[in-house]
Image (cartoon, rainbow, N blue to C red; front, top):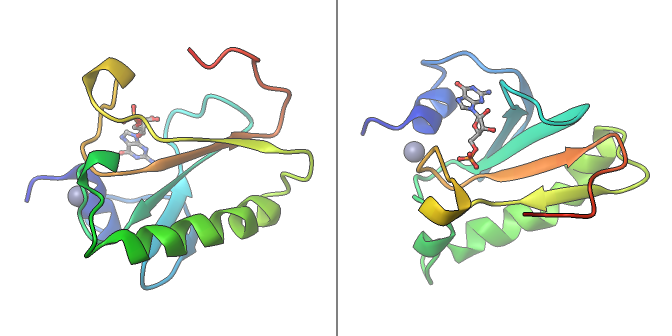
Length: 112
Ligand code: 5GP
Ligand code: ZN
């Protein structure tokens, strides 16, 4: 499958790893929009939030359970924002489900 993030998981494209286990891979965004900008992705290919189903929702639960720990390890003591762009109106550019952890500064009150 020609998927950028599957290639990053496979190590075919280099990335700056932040965390990894059997369910997920977390790495620094190549174009950070804040002092801390990390992407957390499921190891199995799921195109977007719309692809979450009975079979894969356990892995997503593990990701959401781990994200506060990853954020703490990144030093985000004062809060952070978690974003998942889903589909064209949200400008999702990579069609492999990912969660942006953004922080390290006071973020805009606006989300759109
Ligand atoms: P989206 O716009 O789909 O929500 O987010 C995709 C994110 O992936 C963007 O923030 C973009 O900077 C990041 N990205 C795209 N290509 C690469 C890459 O090759 N390596 C890394 N580390 N991040 C990437
Ligand atoms: Zn993929």
